[in-house]
Image (tube, rainbow, N blue to C red; front, side, top):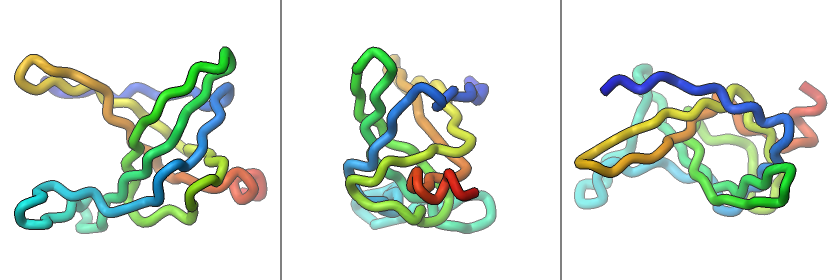
Length: 109
């Protein structure tokens, strides 16, 4: 199954970093770190996402390179995409962004 990227409209979402960025580990036994097709380290950031109705979910967002954010920062997810996945009858949505910037920097960009 090839996953088609689904653009996420973040205009009505409040995104907050709740866990510091860290390299994504592919294999806990070997410590192998995920890299993109160019060999750059892929980081994962756990964020809370609140919609306009006050519903909150925790999600992990993957990003190439360490983003300049820390716990507690309000975040602007630039180019956020969702990818539906399925493995052995289980499924979910993986998220990836082009950039994760603190809201104060994203407003300047």
